[in-house]
Each structure stands twice: as structure tokens, then as C-alpha cells.
Image 1 (cartoon, helix red, strand yellow):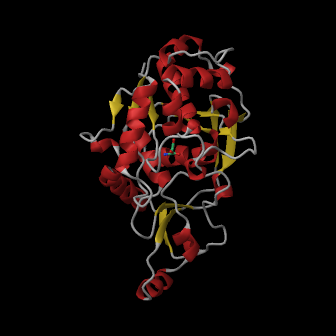
Image 2 (cartoon, protein in one colour; image 1 turned 30 degrees about the vertical axis):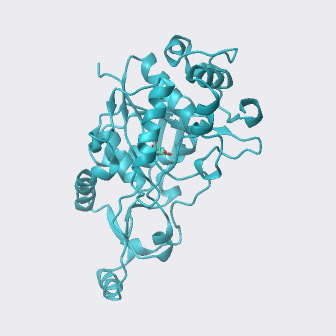
Image 3 (spheres, rainbow, N blue to C red; image 1 turned 30 degrees about the horizontal axis):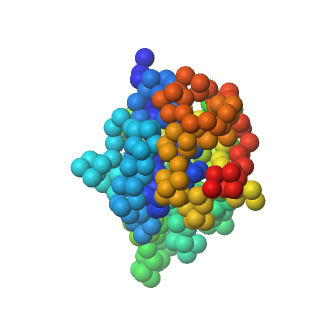
Length: 314
Ligand code: GLU
């Protein structure tokens, strides 16, 4: 049987916050409870927002928390960062072009969609009013001659993708409901959906554990990996930690960061408190991630998002 391979795939656009720690802990526990191995991949496509200084911090924090990976990014192993994997994305892009699945999109809205990072909840990822898929060659040349640089979109079929999420159960979605999506921006940067699919496929990932805010992206990635000739991994989405006003914890809002936590708490205290709010243990007393492995089961984890009360941690 194929060995289970999971992954951490953080974007180094800031230091980790408590929501990232919770998803990382779950990815680690899922992998270790199956005696699998874990890859640490840096998702730094968005060069304006990502910094290697943050990648180093994230790596250090994961080690400090006692949830290390088995193989992956370090300053000496840049091939585990998306910024070093452009050749693989070029190959996939050409392959999809040869399959006649790619077309240029000249809409100014497409240029504005960031696409390089994983979509945030409620973020628009495509533009349903776009008609660029149906432009003739002459119309395209006219736009090119007028100096327009296109983004590149994938022609999405009218096809229902169903998969069994290991936590949320059967999910079905017609790809055409989400519309054609960008796989390369007009500035040449590859988009999150293409890069993540190519990486999961080429790294031999068998299980993806991540926050449920990426559930919507999963049918796209399953379809894309299949079009590229790969076998999609299994997916297991986790509830999000949300603040009392139901905002997703995020680097953008400066929620409880790893830096603040490290000043006050030991790794076992952080892991213990998270294990308590995730429902893995009944008390929130200090515990190592290693000790949690045998108590871990997805049945214990709620499906609803978990309200995180800052006041109980500070
Ligand atoms: N890099 C993404 C993030 O930090 C995660 C992408 C994924 O797990 O597919 O939000």
C-alpha cells in the first residue's frame, strides 16, 4: 500500500496565528496517526506579500511546537518553495494549452483578481460576465496589438465533481457554477489553483488536511490534477477558528500571533489548549503533540467553526 504523505503548505506572508497553528496541528496529527510522512512546502507565489524571513519563522515555530515535518523547505532546500518550482508550472501550463483548455482573458477585472494566494472566505475568484473564452483570433490580435496583456484562464466544463471529504462527507459541485478560473496572471505569475495542484501531484501527496475555507477550491483541484494525468489526494477539511464576531482568524487582522503566544506560553500549553478547544482532550492541560497522537480522531473534531476567545489565552 502507498505510504500516506501529508503536507503543510503555509504562505509566508506573516507570522503564524492561532488559526494556522490549529490547522498545522491537525495536519500533523492526521499524518502521524497514520504513520505517514509530512512535507513542508512554502507557498510563496505572491512575491509582493511573501518574505523568506517569515518562512524561516514558520519553520522555527513548527519545530518549537513539537510538530516537525519529515522533508521540506529550508534555506538549503529551496525546491520546496513554489518560487523555485516555476519550471513544473510551465510544463503543466503547456500541457493544458496543448489540450486546448487554456485561453487568454483580457478583462481588467481578471487582472485585478489576485489569484496568486489561496482565496479568502467570500473572495471572488472568477468573473462570470467575462466573454473572453469566445473571442475570435482576430479579436484577440486586436487586443494584443492595443497592448493588452492577458491573464490565462482554464475552460471549465459543465461537469459535477464529487468527492468524499474525510471530515465533511460527500461534497458535489458543478465546476461551471464557479466559472472559468485564472491559472496564470497577466504579469506571468502562476495562480494558486495551478501551483497547488501541480505541487500536490508531483510531491505524491496522498492526504490534504487544511482549513474548510478551501473546500470550494477542492473540486477545481481534483479536476485539474485529473486533467494533468495525476491521481488526486484525499481531502480532509478542518473547522476554522473564528473570533467571537465570527471572523476567520487571519494574519491580516493581527489576531493572536505566534510571537505573542511564544512570549507567554510553553509549546505543551499551546498544544494542550488547542487540543481542548478542538475536542481532542477533555481538559486543556499541557500535553505534547506526540502524546496526542493516540487520542486523536476526526470523530472528536467538530464540523462547526470553533469560537476562539482571546481573553482566555491572554
Ligand atoms: N497556502 C495556503 C494558505 O496558507 C494553503 C493552501 C492549501 O492548503 O491548499 O492559506
